[in-house]
Length: 347
Image 1 (cartoon, rainbow, N blue to C red):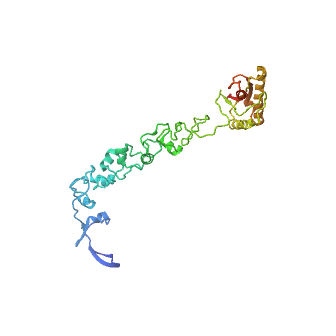
Image 2 (spheres, rainbow, N blue to C red; image 1 turned 60 degrees about the vertical axis):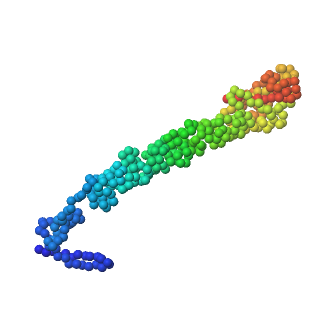
Image 3 (tube, helix red, strand yellow; image 1 turned 30 degrees about the vertical axis):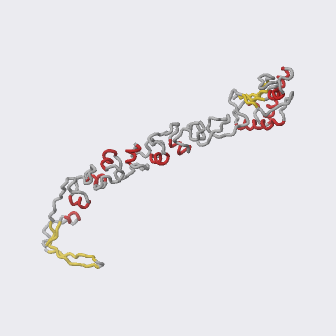
């Protein structure tokens, strides 16, 4: 028997209620889902199964000719763009453009990226290191799937485009420091083993961008420095050239104070230093007397330093008389030079 329905139609801003009379075919039940309705037709007899057209896929690529028409692909070729991937795989698996052999325009075909290099066919720079996949594979010979091919702390793109270092070598200049350490931490030149040209390799240079001051004091640390009032290696002596004595006198001349004060500053700065104060004399007078004078001169310097706060445990005195002259005793100037104090470093 006929069944009456009311259909609501909206068009051009109007709403119409239309009474419709259906003659339902004698089915025991109906499925009114969208999928089911697509296979139903409405005619004078009511709702009946529609005649479904057969699915046509002339090229056998998994896409119907109708789908290919909608996509713009060639229904007579399973691989419309001739990139080596069939159209249905490009659409359903790789999500690439089946009408372009190189979907991301990086110079590699979609097939090469998917099957050969395993890079992303939809991303020109798969590892996002600043270099396109083709450049990494064919020019720099780096890994397009690893942003830092040599694992030195710098992206391949940074090495090639910014720092000009070798993206395949951790240490481009062979100085023992990785390119990343030089660029990020030390701010030195990763292309030369001695960034500041002071003769101290960056690996050993505590100041790789500053010239070493060649003054005999810590010349191997690579840093600029001011020579202390005295400095000597263990087992060597340092002449206090500005500490002078009048003939026969054991107390330093007044002008000696400046250098002695400098010695105090150095000893305070380097508390590990210990030394022997060695006094000397010229050959005027008896040798035994000169030996006593030289020891008294060493003792005078010892007392001066101790009064300035230098620990007595770090010092000891010795007198050498007229031995080990450094100048000729035949002249006044030579004898003045021989009346001297030397600091011998113990440790």
